Image (cartoon, rainbow, N blue to C red; front, side):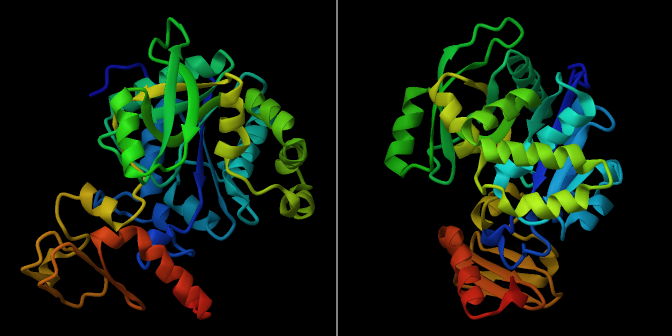
Amino acid sequence: MSTLPRAIPGFHAVVPAGGAGTRLWPLSRAGHPKFLLDLTGSGRTLLQATVDRLLPLTGAGGVLVVTGARHAETVAAQLPEVGADDVLAEPSPRDSMAAIGLAAAVLLERHGEDVVLGSFAADHVIAGTEGFERAVREGVVAARAGYVVTIGIAATGPSTAFGYVRSGASLGLDEAPGVAHAAGFTEKPDAETATAYLATGEYRWNAGMFLVRARVLLDHLTTQLPTLAAGLQEIAAAWDGPDRAEVLERVWPGLTKIAIDHAIAEPVAAVGGVAVVPGDFSWDDVGDFESLAALLPVDTLGDEGVVLRIDSDGAFVVPRTGRTVSVVGLPGAVVVDTPDAVLVTTLAHAQAVKSAVDAWRARGREDLL
């Protein structure tokens, strides 16, 4: 049980809920992606678990979800505790900068200059509530000091599936003693490089969680990509009024498609404006079936009674049709059985599942995607 105080004054959480989760196909589909699924057997979807984690820190009315128009109705249905006005529907995907920037601009319009936002993806799995809360609280302190703050996750090994952030000198903030300057970001490295990084003690996984004053974020965006910043602020000014649809239709399609890492984090870090707060809690972005299998206490996501394994230690099975699944002589296999598609691969090839999605798309089978 956490002993930390709860809601943080002036803090709002933004939950970008997008992507198709193609490495978890055919479980995750474009029309019903992984954040809308219960992948942990907890009875809560990844999106619901994310909001459960954030509401105690924001208080009622403190969570804003940004999602695609095709998912907005399902998102709202899964989150009755989040008001309809706090589900922002994007007409089309424009990547994370547009999603988070729109939320920042809407929050500024609604709550004024002092609002601090934290961006937390809808499809991550986190364990360790007190460690998460502590990281967010220290991050908010650094955000109020004017920094763009990222949470650096303590690496459990030299993973090649994640990007890395390097910590520099401490910021020297009394209320956030663990926060340091971010010395730079690195995309997914090879195994040798990742091992060398961890040996220095200066690198953590970059989980893509950011905390920043909304005004600071938009000011940086105005410097880096002024047209994108102006477009988002024009949309936000009309969001709660009668002209939203007209302005969205006119402005949104022309917005630059770019990730927040490339638009803000990397260039601002280069001039000393980004900080990293240690995140000493368990985290996974559930990027493929190998990581999903590692999260679960059993090797079946579903009814174990319909699965038979013979000489197939560690075979991971997702039975979704009621049919029996027999795996014989295939240790480390992955079998996902859904009504219209079956995937058979191995844990070692889990990252390659996206290639099956690309291949079916090339054959014109959009119905499978």
